[in-house]
Image (cartoon, rainbow, N blue to C red):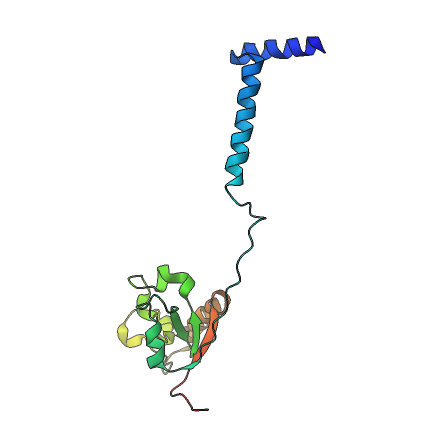
Length: 162
């Protein structure tokens, strides 16, 4: 056993220039540092996503929908396609104020999406005069929204009193 220790200390000194005591002290300190740093972070296995409460805003008029355009940070960011309202708050970088698609927030953007248009006059839910190709584009958008965002309500012309 003594020869193993002697051989080990000679090899350590030859390769590092350190005594065995210094080498193992540094090794222990590195291991402790590694453990401390690792404990600062969660592993992917430790992560449990928080299930957010899904909104259900029910029936909403176009006028009411406009209040959810991102101008009030306390309200969710909403957008409609084919009269179905989606919460797009998780994509503020796309639909929030000052972003590329901000003009669609708080509106039914069906026609604009179908036509791939940014014209203000196209940002509405009117599908009249659209061809099969445009309706297919709109369907693709609608599928993406259904997959990615929670549906929180639907557009109505006027609310009925119950």
